[in-house]
Length: 247
Image (cartoon, rainbow, N blue to C red; front, top):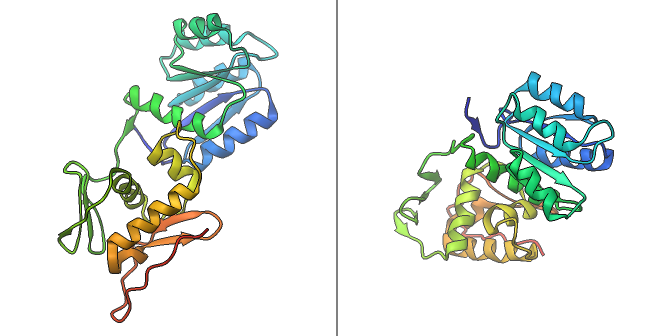
């Protein structure tokens, strides 16, 4: 069954013996809507892959009971599930061997959990496991965004948006009603390789609000966290208040 991004239909098996890393990755993956099944031993991980038929496997190469390479070969003997390997060793031969044995990607410790989540999405997309569950046209109130035409309008009037403003508005509309952290917006709109500051998001939100005019308030600040589009928002008849970005 195709996996829809952002829903609990996406099962991930995490094979990692370090409790702190395992807990952190489970937190990040669960926050993205994935069901995470974890194992600290390779044998347990192989059993989980058989039982759960996950959309993705994340495998640490350094495990106490078996070599990660042996586990990878075992998994590949019965499943073509997308797989990301984690390794503390930056040796090129380890990366090459892992990829030759059937890994789809690898990450060297220490790593950013946000980057791993982004790579997981990329691996799933390449494997054809994710469907775009959002409609092609996004609407909220008088705001209409057409991704294929790269155009956005308010009450039928075209908006003059920069590329990043357009992409930010698109992502906010696709996820309307959800509180999105600044870090998630940076990862999704600017890309996980973008090492910008959260202030970048604030500035772009401020510009979007101005360009949306009386509908600018539909992008609401979630204080101390990020932003969300309120699908129930309606501008008051006597006010064109524009909420300022949190600093």
